[in-house]
Amino acid sequence: MKLFVLSTTLTATAAFTSVGHNAVKSALCSTADDATEIETSDLPQPGDSAVLAINGWIPDDSAKCYGLPGAVAPTGYFDPLGFAQPGITLNEVKRNREAEVMHGRVAMLASVGYLVGESFPSPFGIAGPANDQLQQMPAPAFALLTVAIAAAELKRATIGWVEPDFGDWSKTLWKLRDNYYPGDVGFDPLGLKPTDPKAFADMQTRELQNGRLAMIGVAGMCAQEIFNHRTILETIDFYNKVFSGLDPYDNCGGTIC
Image (cartoon, rainbow, N blue to C red):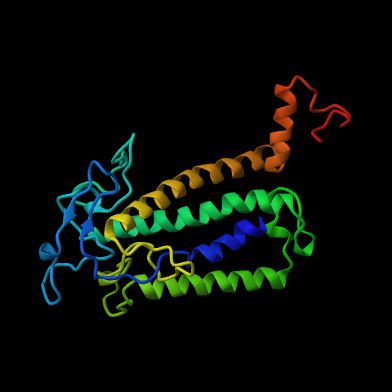
């Protein structure tokens, strides 16, 4: 659980570098079949009333999900609950994408954290299923972790969100900045962010797909440990014995060992 919890701190800032507007071409879709490129002459210029390109993406209210990447075969564009149906505002779509990207990043780190945290020695004598590890942390370490997470989230809020207007809070509540690309908080220590818009859209799609899978996977890991109170590897070993025709309770006194 220690790495799972720590992942929330890291992932709050795990994004690409700051946005750029000097791309030659812009790709609105993630798949090769649906890719639509816009020449430089078609991009809005500084001072135009139109929205400027963000990482090569220009919001298109006639396109699904305003043209954000993330749709791949075999499902293609998949929105059964209508989170991006016509009539949903651009700000709501961007906010939903922000939530999806950030939760996906947390889940990807957490999926690794479950396995690593349960397999290797850890500080403070923390052990056992990852679901039980947070409560084993000493109070000072837990307080420090809480402060670090809060600081990271506040930093992300100052980058992506409009400052609150306390005189009329309804104008700025949940509102993202017009020039903010969902998830792009300016953190790219390895320089992995592509400068080409099409390459950026493809990388964003890969990140989204892996994040979606990780969210489902971590939910399964968490549910499994709640159900049988065993680590992931212990559960794998248990069923390996079952499918091999061995008695998983042998030498355990009739209990799960």
